[in-house]
Image (cartoon, rainbow, N blue to C red; front, side):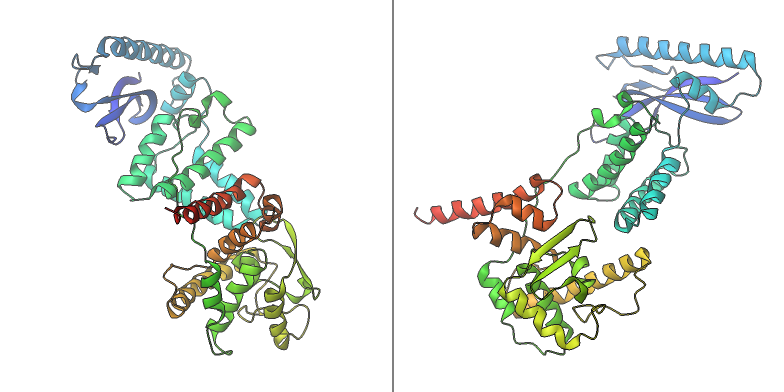
Amino acid sequence: MASIKVVLKNKVNTEGEKTLFLRIIKNRKAKYISLEYRIKEKDWDCVQSKVKKSNLNSAKLNIYIATKIAEAQSVALEMETGSKFIETKNIKEAILGSKSVSFIKYAEEVIEKHKLKNSIGTYHRYMSVVSKIKVYINNYELTFNDITSNYLNDYENYLRTILKNKTNTVLSNFKVIRSIVNEAIKNDIIPYDKNPFLKFQLKHEKTNIEFLTEEELIKLDHLILNPNSIKFHIRNMFVFASYAGGLRISDLITLKWSSYDGERLLVNTMKTGSTVSIKLPTRAFQIIETYKTYKSTNNDYVFPLTKKTINELNPIEIHKFVSSSSAYINYNLKELAITAGISKKIHFHISRHTWATRALRKGARIEFISKLLGHSSIRTTQIYTKIVNEDLDKTMELFD
């Protein structure tokens, strides 16, 4: 006969509470079902498996616990009467009303699909998030039924207190989990009303977007550097991106002469797969023209940082090269900023922010900026309008 009891489980949250679980033990194997309630440890009688009177809702909670135990015992007895070959997972599935699908196995299937689609950045991001969860559950068989809003709260507490993740890092982790859950709902793995994110709020922390002013960009552009040095090419790439539609570093590293017709660039962006056509303004045109001395064929890369031996049919190899090159480029950009007397901590993505804010200040329409940046939604681009508006407010404060 299966042993059924209610226990307190999971880590203590910031309010000193733990979650109530229905524990089913049979053949020395235990399974747990969350009852979706939390109480403080001091209010729990672990011997009687009851809520102490010190909890204001003790009467209601104890009735609820007794009801759930009775329901579980009834289901277990009925199943065991029909067959002696019953495991704890079978009883758990019967109580929950459906077979529990492994979250980890399903997540790995989703991850593999991203790999097959050559979405290597997404593949690595999902892998990282799921690896964290595997460490957290410590070989526990995590199912979609286990992932409740309480479970997400406990996991958030773990990310913050144990792994010391910042708010936006936690957010990016939960966005991946939510995406996997939504995929499961779309494929009828779990019903919509079982979506734990219906009761779980994602938290976001406002970050300051750095960009270079016109004066700072000119300082960087006018730095006297050895034309044969790596820093010379990295500086040129940054300034080029600040004029040429804020192209991402991944697209500039892999930019070939075949994408340039002498006036404009036609780029298939690596991150989104969208195609953008960019008519080069004078400064960007001047920079790209200086690199024609390195050109042998249209299949050559524009900027002489990229190895010609990259296997372009292997997206994993390309992703690794772009990642390692990005780290190297950003390291050199920090040194270039110091040399130019710029106090901001520069990384290549700042060139993208620099182009967008400059374009807005020069009167460009936001929908055109959004198109050139390759944003899927204009809402993503609107953050730059806030930056420009804040600058205008600061200008008016000068009159005070």
